[in-house]
Length: 321
Image (tube, rainbow, N blue to C red):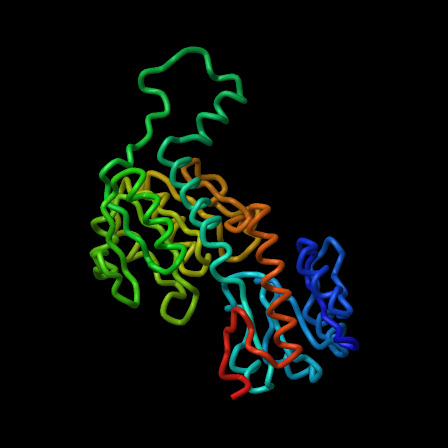
């Protein structure tokens, strides 16, 4: 497979890169601390056959049309809303992603956020570090039990289902969900009903026209005042300014966000000053085994695309029909 060149927009675990190189593919990686700009990416892709991209890099129509050699794009993520799929297909470019391999890691992170918020882990830890632990306090850092509470999942796909099962099996939580499709054995309901009845709400939906800004002020106000809200999906699903407004009005026992809009979050965002908000820097898939698996799947997508074969994780399989 000589003479093929692939560009990688961030350094990723070596397994996938080693696989590409073992097949004779030339691999070049953006190795600077600052993110690659669109113009820089456009310049380096002029002579590239494949691209491994990250969610933060916008692969739009203009970039795609400026890179006539490009045959395949593999996103190092399960989401691909950063790529213009229609433009890619129109230009005979196969697109792949990394589903399945990060399901458990992301569900685990959502659970970690939920437990941290429900038991006020961050606040109590901060108190210890600040030297405020002077005695055992019967009323200190009282959290919320999850046992038997109602969990509302928005987007009961692979990750949503994995998270729901952890909550159901571990805490006996009752599950309702708002999703496109029915799930046997799981209670589907309307969005408004889910927001009104849930003690915990967790977002696991993809970002698309239907889910973009799904939860604005009016929807967020429907929730119980002591509800816990978790978002490991996409920041744009929640109208962030409206979330801040609702929080300042006293809503939510806790909010856990692994995603924000924009990313990275503005260091001056009021969200960072609200004690019951816990934010992590989009680390849903960040365990060693998962990121290694993502690297390998990304490389296998690239190799398949360079050979005009079906990608293991194909986003636009109609591209070569």
